Length: 517
Image 1 (spheres, one colour):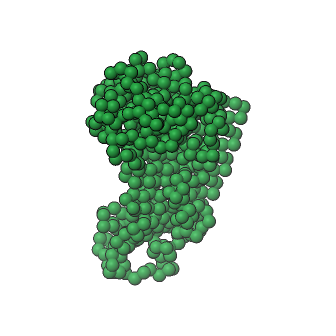
Image 2 (spheres, one colour):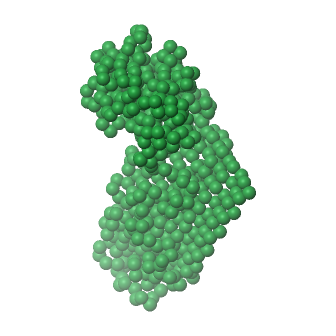
């Protein structure tokens, strides 16, 4: 646009630099997220690193800390958790499914789950929604647990028995109305439901219950009991329907072979995800037909817990694509999507980091009449909103912040333009494409005359310098410099709807259901 602000705010950044930087960051974020949908087979896995087994084997102390949150679960539930942990992407999908279908219960739920493509261990955990939800919320821990079981199965089983022995010796693991604890040998402690038809999931504090404090990296719960005693919620019925019934992956199909060092499923040893290769897994699927093609890919790196997935669909009417990524090391979530048709393109991106509170979203549209878009970024209680529009009449852009900063810019079809900015402390700056630079830092407007600032009056509306004075400016040939146009401009509430709804604008509806809460 050929516009620059001459003045700086109290922090030394020009308002225009902030505006341009914000758009670049959001555009870069969107490009990365959307690229997931077109990653070729194996490339994502190669990019994540090809460590053998994700690195050096974990030590006994590290394994003890890793299994501490589930070591006191009944044997069959331990087996299901260890198996499901090798499918962290499916864990999140199943958890989302339960949240989206709260009315499904009993046999109806089992039949709906049985129709999914998930692993039997993940399907089995849908009967224990609190366990599945905890694994989804602590995906970094889940990923590490899955990697450990896939590469050190016998060591993981030994760690579970080590912790059970410590809790037993401390007097914190004993039989009761919910569980029955049997010490079969000095090295083997078995935990089973007291009532074979009802399973109780224990809640306990890993830093107390074992007599030795264990802190599990990447794991946290909202509220744990303060004492070393086990607490139990409502029991889960595991009658005939769940034990076998329609599906074969029910409660009675799972157990632990403590002497063989592996989970047991359906009477045989079960080691989880067979697609683990050198510490990562990735998969790609494609389909082609007379009306177009569809592609899907996913990748996972257990060393960092990072996973990503994306897909695209192409038809004679256009293309739709979507991508999603999560990094438990930083807590960052990101997702994006785009829709392209003969009439134009719409794309959106969104990212959130709960560790820092940073949130960003952008929504961009282009068609035969021009391009339009809005973005939002917030952190530490401060939020910035931006919008832009380009048509045959020219270009306009604006930025406002929750602490009082704002900036506007416009360029008409014939090249005339202006920009105006106000920092959070109230200082005002303006510039025009004919070289005029102005500032108002509290003592009236001043103009820059070859490095010398002199006081001036607000230009006459008929003068060449009239474009550039805040909201009253209007570029020559432009339909409206700042707002007022129906093409692409929205209210702040509309432009920031991604923050309110946690969605990604219109693209999420068009991206083939790629995103789930």
